Amino acid sequence: MSGPEQGPVAERPSGPPTCYRHPGRETWIRCQRCDRPICPDCMHSASVGFQCPECVKEGARTSRQARTPYGGTRLRDPRLTTFALIAVNALVWLLIVATGGNSSKLLDALALLPAPWVRGGPGHVITGVSGGAWWQVVTSMFTHVEVLHIGFNMLALFFLGPMLEGVIGRARFLAVYLVSGIVGSAAVMLFSAPNGQTLGASGAIFGLMGAIAVLALKVGGQAQSVMGWIAINLVLTFTLGNISWQGHLGGLLSGVVLGVAMVYAPRRRRALVQWSVVSVVLVAAIATIVLRAADLSAQWPALPPGL
Image 1 (cartoon, rainbow, N blue to C red):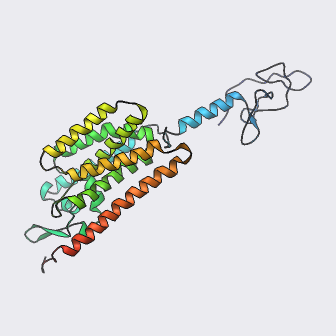
Image 2: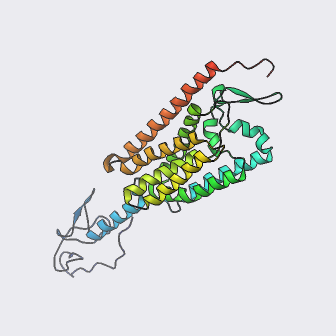
Image 3: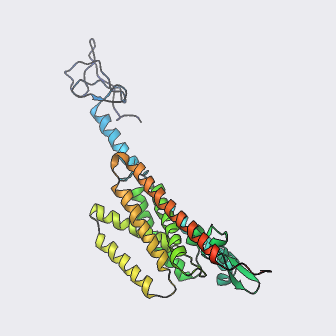
């Protein structure tokens, strides 16, 4: 990157150039970035040669702007990833509605069913995770049927997503979102009825809530407001019917753990610590899903002949 704009360097007709900050001091040293002459009091050691104070300040400012406070790449528009996630959720919802809504075979393929199989109607069998439909632990977090369900989830994502992505960067934001959704699926595999289907982005969104709560506590922000919002959603989770408390709590716990890793990791080993914790949480969730699937597969009755 070029240094600050400048006019031609004034030099004496005969003799060496003078420092641009101290015109009375002769010098043969030049800034490696802007090529202006600098005296020993003005030069700062660089990776190659020396730089003047203005170029050092400009370099520091540029470096700070290139990274978020917690190591991610600073984005021009931190809403783009959120918009992409909303678009995927909306597209899947439209396809499910167009193919029958609650009776859609696409819904049966994408929603999370822990059991190996269940009857979906006369002559129709729905295959679950334990029966080989492993993709459901991910696709279920992009699957909705009811308008209010997708509406509330996408509204929460619209407000929470850019807030978190702008602080930790795109890759870390996606890690919190997706891993929290998978941890929510692992909790559903463990604690929900094996023959019930679970769907929705709520586990991933609760993960965002947990991470933002940690961030608010770290920076001294409006932590009480965030905690209050989480408390209200937890009350609704346990008081309203037909809501997966397993997925919500699993996602929230994951978000808190990953949020701590993102904002409290030591600066010198920040990326290593952050991605190590993400990997450990993800591997633990996958191992839980695999073990639970093996257990359900062993105890579930065999598929009747002809189905």
